[in-house]
Image (tube, rainbow, N blue to C red; front, side, top):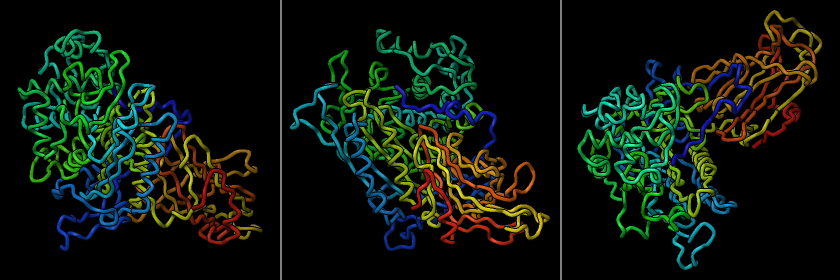
Length: 634
């Protein structure tokens, strides 16, 4: 079973044939102090605003931006270990984080519940800033009947969860370790290691194709019912017929990771579980991360689904049927863990592949793993994948989304989000399939958790937080409109002057963080009382983050986490607008997922050549002239 929310381009018909400006550009965090030694100079935390803002490069990932490094270049990172902390010590607002219990409770109280129980951990700069657990690791006898209340088992901070597809990150890490050792190459064909894989036209599928889910494999086949034993199931998974040529189509596939698990075993001469334990979890001290947990841990393990076909409530063995039929150890599923152990795994990546003195990966390998490889396949607004991790996943990274955010979700209700821009990790482990997968809607809560953490980090600049806010609700069109008279020459009432200095200009301070390609901010003008609207081309500038051109007046994407000074010349059809006009900012969101939204403040209109202020929201009468439909003023 996979846990993936596709983003077909048909979600927004306006995308077709419409040029939009993507908010790309590398945001680089300020140097982060290592708080490991209390009382030393390294104990001073980095200011929240500085960490959230940073600087920007010229391209989407920063790789061609000269002196500005990719934030996943962790070669200079300290070897931080995960330890107790508090929100303020790492620049998080504790009052904002105190909203997290209510978010979890809302998921539990939903009808039907989004999950039975959940354990949450937020860490930043290597310190645990927040932990919380609520609900029940075990509550249901079957899909409709609860256990007696005295048999309910509360979810705790040390509850062990079936990670489901987060297991794929462990397989990917194992593969990359073998690449580092020279036992594999990303360009190796899978068939060169597993000859059986090469049948049915898959001879040219490579290791990298499978890591990035562009190997042309189907998403899934039923192994546990259609084949009698482990060897026949593995054979069927390897021999599966492709549905596309390699490198041409993105299909999130469990079968590709099953094959990679077999590659690890053949190349290393060890079972996947043994290899992962000896080379990943044991060196990292992840003593509560394992395949096939022993019976003595059962009381701490979250139950998953009641299986009507077998009359069994799954608890203590992997929920995924294919992984269970393969003995509980497979490349796509099977790992169990806790929030604290998973935080160590995430911190290893943020440390550039090392933790507690143990080197698991080279820093260059970590960067490779968290660098997108499939944008040319998936296009604007499509999925983004590194060598294993999922990147820029708005459907659960939400308010923390950037071109650099990773890592993965699991069908059972688990998720891991890593934001390298602030060195922040958000882990939510839940049993959303207990007692039935029909109730599994965990991503709503995942998004709310990530967005809450983003606000606690101060990603929205303080300067605009008191301004108008929109884009925080799905499936809406929000407009912020004002009318004014530009006069006859663009220089104010009465036509004083002429247009030789150009048109009047609309300016504003704004911040935007919108799901790329599906949610849009547009500046518009109307010269016919709102009957028709013309997008206003403009330019955004930021002291720290460079310049963004918006030739069609529309903006989308992560916005570089910057506060922008936006300028939109009031021009329609190549000529300056004059006379009575209406101006508006419109935010359109689709019905699925969203980012932090849009904040707009200090809106002004100046006459041509930077002359008289025709409108300024710092003046009460001008501020009151705006009609807000779907916008709120904080």
